[in-house]
Length: 83
Image 1 (cartoon, helix red, strand yellow):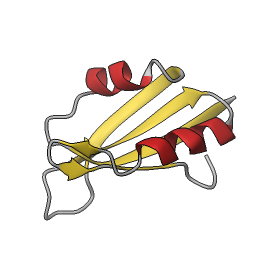
Image 2 (cartoon, helix red, strand yellow; image 1 turned 45 degrees about the horizontal axis):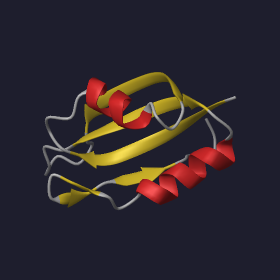
Image 3 (cartoon, helix red, strand yellow; image 1 turned 90 degrees about the horizontal axis):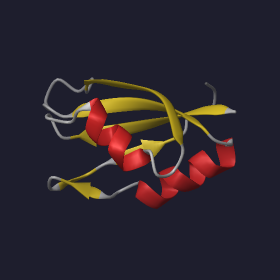
């Protein structure tokens, strides 16, 4: 079962490989898309990570890592209501 997790407020230099390495231990990653944040006042990035795991596990993962400090700023993780 595939579920998506959004990660916001990533550092400007964030790369797909870094996210893959950090998350691969938690679930099989199917795809990662890293894009510029939609806020024009920041140079941060955001990512959509599609993983092979049940939704409840993705929600637990998002809760566990939400607010973690990455390069001096807290990141935000969430599972959207619908994929």
